[in-house]
Image 1: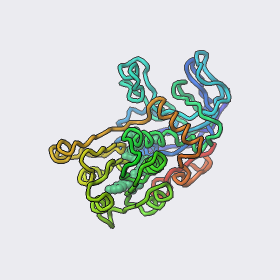
Image 2: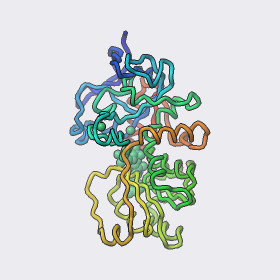
Image 3: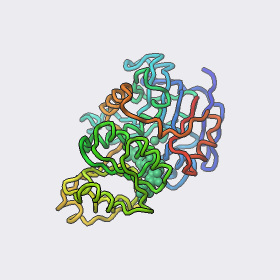
Image 4: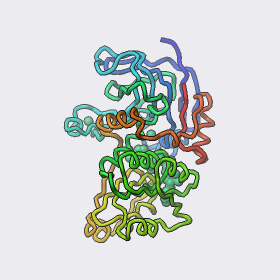
Length: 345
Ligand SMILES: NC(=O)c1ccc[n+]([C@@H]2O[C@H](COP(=O)([O-])OP(=O)(O)OC[C@H]3O[C@@H](n4cnc5c(N)ncnc54)[C@H](O)[C@@H]3O)[C@@H](O)[C@H]2O)c1
Ligand SMILES: [Zn+2]
Ligand SMILES: [Zn+2]
């Protein structure tokens, strides 16, 4: 079928943009002409080949990238859900379809979960092959760039939906792409007060644009005190962690109100010690883990909110570059100067 450009991680120390054959589409697969792909922290781990990447079950060489949007270019013989020409966004969680979770409406936490762009070739390429179940058709009104960030957006939106944040006071920890999308989702779904915290003032500025009523840099101000002051001393109804910071998560139990909920999205690199009696049991704190998007309830909610223009994503996308400038994109993301970086193809 010809060749395509792809960003291939060829060895632990090398990634390069090279010509590779356009992949074949199996009977249950979809071939997508990728139009926009977004860079995520996971890609940076894989690029750096750090301890996480080394233990993630990745087989090299492989095509990097997992967040994307494009047009269906070919479908396998058994595919009924999408047709050639449909605009699709990619769901990263590849479910087995037969385990207990898959059979009980929780495919996104499948027992045999595989990840697109980690355990199989990804989307930093002109074409990508994904299982049809992961090719989510989206309305034409959603742009390629917005479509390329629906995967992280959905994780954030889900935290707001699952905590039922309408009319509440929400604290969002971490204003990377996920935290910013959580701020926007909370604003969109009617949170009463949104306090966003990050140690980067540049990111806090974006949080304010996306709907945070107050922004706090915990290196300069006492976050717990600020939350208690803003909530008549009761504490936050909801905390969303998108920082993965051990210190931030631990501290949040001190200003979560009695009966409050904490949704954990961030992935701390160490265990967190909690005084369960005081911080969880007597408080009746509800701790909710969030791993990706409900397939496909969260996607439907995103489509509805994005196509009516109610859910804001643009301020989090700080850079859009052609894939040929991938190295610059990675450096911008590594330096913390960029928030979400998109590659156009
Ligand atoms: N659960 C899931 O399905 C899922 C999916 C994607 C990413 N993640 C995880 O979610 C987290 C956020 O992802 P991201 O792409 O936005 O990452 P990111 O690294 O861009 O954002 C994290 C932000 O937290 C901030 N931060 C660090 N320490 C802090 C502190 N003490 N207080 C407040 N803010 C602090 C950082 O400055 C940064 O802006 C990461 O841990 C990532 O691994 C989870
Ligand atoms: Zn991602
Ligand atoms: Zn399964």
